[in-house]
Image 1 (cartoon, rainbow, N blue to C red):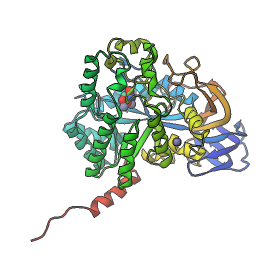
Image 2 (spheres, rainbow, N blue to C red; image 1 turned 90 degrees about the vertical axis):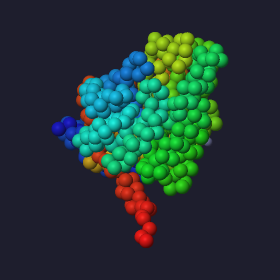
Image 3 (cartoon, helix red, strand yellow; image 1 turned 120 degrees about the vertical axis):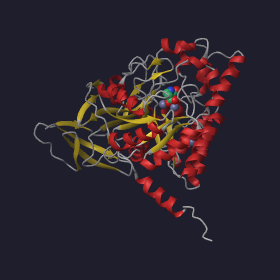
Length: 480
Ligand code: URP
Ligand code: ZN
Ligand code: ZN
Ligand code: ZN
């Protein structure tokens, strides 16, 4: 039996914060309460003056992803270890089948890659093409493998982009299975056209990246996906919402009673688009990800969306490529592998810019960094809540601790840090994963292969409500 007693802290859940000790036994939270006694042999963590929160859930990462002719620097071990150093104890990564690749083949490949994880992990599966076998495999994934969400890339033409026919078929199937459809919303046709347009104008550097992916291109796709979801009466989750126009599309649909959910990346909240005009290619290319970073007005809209409740989760899209990999696009920005890191920095950056500025309460911070993702992807309160019976995945948060974020000290294997030089106040002092202290005051004790695959059951609470609504509004013939 292994036990850890976290003593003297303030427990922060999404609904409230209160003084309590937290006792973890054999990987689970055994008790949350006042003046708990330490069992014999228990490790005691002093959390005086600190917060005890659910470990972060990053619902959008890409470890060991083969993408744009190369593979990300971080694999499932280094990426999850970096997460633990930053207080994130669960990732939901993506299985991305190549077009025509059977979904189950891709799924098995990713499951094998992920066995080296140091923290718990789960998978969304991308639907990149359509036929009867995809329909069947979606069923197997949901019913046998604990996948309850499917991803659709509306961008990346001639690669993994899916057309409206695939979107419609897959959304419909997801509804039948009780799984959440998610979309990367960018109009891939327009991106393709604008990329060619920029190159024809002699714009070959990274500044061409945001110019070929303006907010309107993102908003068109977000609106289309939301409209399709509305007609089919399926819930929909829009990943990495980066601009005001997309956030407004979500807010409008929600105001009209639709079940639409939005995710925001730590980078989109805090990094602005001036980075793409930096004269240093490596610096500008280091920030190339899709959708691109936006200006301050858009950043404000994302914060306001989180505050207002029409955006729900925060993630990183952690997808690290090094300078040598980014150099593939030295003479053509459209060949720069898309992706940036952040799994390690998300909590600290959002605490610093969110809680320290009064935009968010600590409980609201927990909602957008773990609880909401756990609810939407149906693993709450096993994850995302400090409560007896939950997994003992916790972060002890020192609100007075400071750190300057840098590639020099990051655990991630990338050679770039989009938050370079930013000094944050509010850092994890301890991270517990599966009831074990895996990070303590700078000392990372991540262990290869101990992370467990998290099965997520279908039919989260949204689905019953949707079924009732569908039944009430079912069309019926006129009897004559
Ligand atoms: O640029 C990005 N975001 N790379 C990873 C793939 C994706 O679009 O999420
Ligand atoms: Zn994406
Ligand atoms: Zn504001
Ligand atoms: Zn992504």
